[in-house]
Image (cartoon, each protein chain N blue to C red):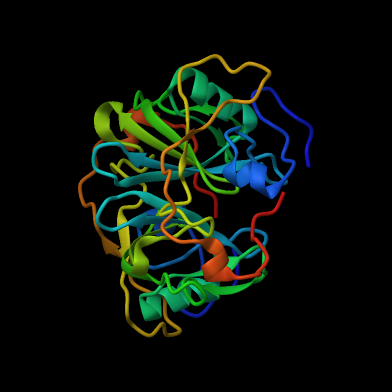
Length: 161
Length: 161
């Protein structure tokens, strides 16, 4: 049980966490909470990210999605560089309060730094025996919404091997 | 860069990971990958979970969702106890291949161990200044789909404080 933090209740019992009406989020060992972001209109999954306590508070207060950038190690107001701000229509928390769901509208319609609408632009086939060779992916989106070079210039790519 | 594993490509370059057609997932320090599971028809977020390499391979091969249970520390064929199997219609992987999206149909229509349809049954209000006292949650689902005591009996609750 961690110390109470501004806006959050201390986690005192399973009943309180699962059935109560107080926000009592559980951050992991790195102080992060996973966040699922879907398009409010289409239901499409746009991205999977992480929030610190401060990112969660700012998202609640401003109605614009804030994350923690694990690659840049900083608070990240989504869209501050690209202009593709995520306007949060609804926020939900899960049963044990260790995950957040944002339903958003996106200015410009893109949420992926590679230039696609969704980060999840490749599909994994189902129903085949997985052999030694790598599973082959299928592209679900084929056209980029924007050109990353134009939007981000020479900023380092956040993907880490 | 980790050693290649059955069905997965080694991660060799950002271009390969982001633009390539080979599954090259990045598991975290605990060997886990976060998974977002949505209802295929409604787009509703049902749950946020984790997969090991084996859980991902079994999900691909069987078309039924398999996860890693962090509370029970075991491979978890969702629905094996409750009967609420998740039939996977589509699997997607994200840009840097460190998150998975499952679009599923659920036998019986529930995915939450507390008895609700979705694990995300509480909404966080937006647009108010976060004060010292805890943010108050609003219940989005008010009726349970099933009674956890009937389905799980005396099995320990997976929620951890």
